[in-house]
Length: 153
Picture 1 (tube, rainbow, N blue to C red):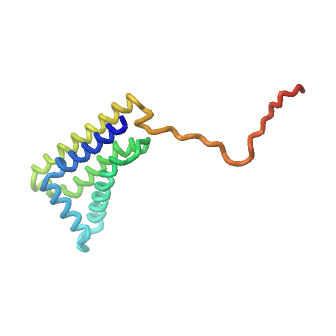
Picture 2: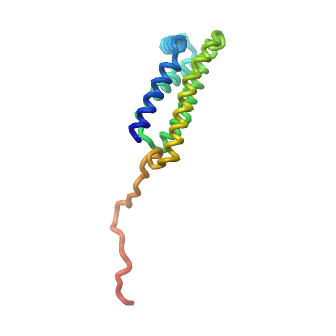
């Protein structure tokens, strides 16, 4: 089941990247990456582009992350943050070419499928979906004293 879920995430990432990033969107992201190194860009635009590029790389690492409680939150919220950063950087291009909005449909479908798959795994096997529970270790120091010596008082 663990391998099946990882394969599902790999397929989702491939479909999300290749179907959700058609040629105009890929060209736009490449142009944004090149304009990030341009000194003429203002600080706000450079920060948005930097966050978008870093989030894109981290989005690809989502496939290889370990299942834990943090992974669950990362899976739900991080793709939304990436999508909002992408829209903030490319809103002028999208308004100039409205057909670019169609390129977001596969990305959003893959995101919905991934969240649905994770929720179904969470219902079936919560230990796998949330990861192993942390072990509670005793504090190092003096050994515990046993007060019950079983001697009569």
